[in-house]
Image (cartoon, rainbow, N blue to C red):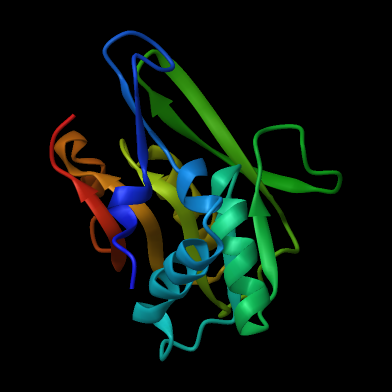
Length: 174
């Protein structure tokens, strides 16, 4: 087993000064590590009756898509506004300066379906909380929210209070 944290590159001052960006591309280029991460991200939910994997735009597509393929499950994308071609519903969330939103097709999730939400990074928690609210609005059941990385010093987990959260790599400081 590889120590996945050693494969995450920290890029200082990206996308702006003072930010230490956690670059996962260095993990993704290692096929064994990518597969290991994907399996470990799914492991806590293997007995939860997951019926669909929902990935958050854009890096959640990488891990969520791989999980859906590996476990023979349908994949549902959460996209930025205006990117999905059919009827959607949206949920807004606060950013540091302003707000943003994500969308999902209205027919993506059926009432009672058990859904695992996947993204690469938990920071402020706004996007993941919005994704969970969309699943709730469609009548789905969020069985968990799985992340590769958490920046726990930002406390985004609070926005997901009451949700089953799993994280492979935790950074407790910048």
